[in-house]
Amino acid sequence: MNNQDLIINFINDFWNKQSFANATIYLCDDYKDFSLPKSLGNDVKATIKWIEMTSEAFSHFTHIEDVLADKNRAMVKVKLQLRHIGLWRGIESTGTSLTVNGFRYFKINDGKIAEHWGLIDGNAIEAQLTAIQNGCAV
Image 1 (cartoon, helix red, strand yellow):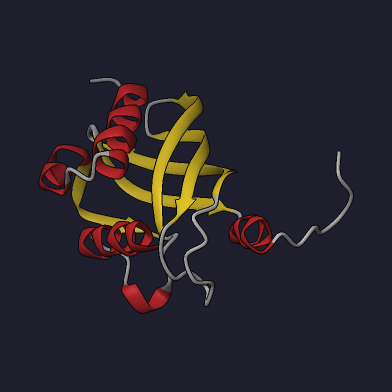
Image 2 (cartoon, rainbow, N blue to C red; image 1 turned 90 degrees about the horizontal axis):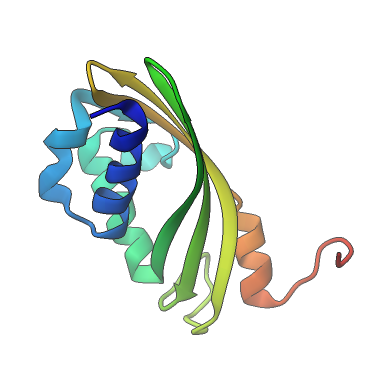
C-alpha cells in the first residue's frame, strides 16, 4: 500500500469507522500522537481514548479534501462534519450540525504511521455552537 492510501484508509477505518482493532495495520508500535492533550499521553491508547471522548460530544465524520504524500510523510486537508450530541467545553448538547476545516500531518516509517500532528480549530467549533460571530461574514 502506498503512503497516500495508508493515510486515506487510516482516517476512514480508524477515525470514521472506529475500527480500533486495526491499529497494528496502520500504526507503528512506538506511534506518537502530538495533537492530543498532554493529560492523555500520546500513544495508541491515548489516540483511541481521544476518539472515544470526541464521539461522546460529537457524531463525527472526517472528509478528506486533499492528500500530499511522499516517501516518509503525508499532509492531509480535512473537513470535519460534526453534530453536537454531548457536553463539550462546558456546552451541553445542542444538536447543532456544523463543519470545520483542519490539517493532519503524518510521519511514516516502513509503511506505517509513526507520528501524527493535527490542527483543528476548536474555537471555530465553539463559535458555531454558541452562535458567536468573531470577525466579519464573508
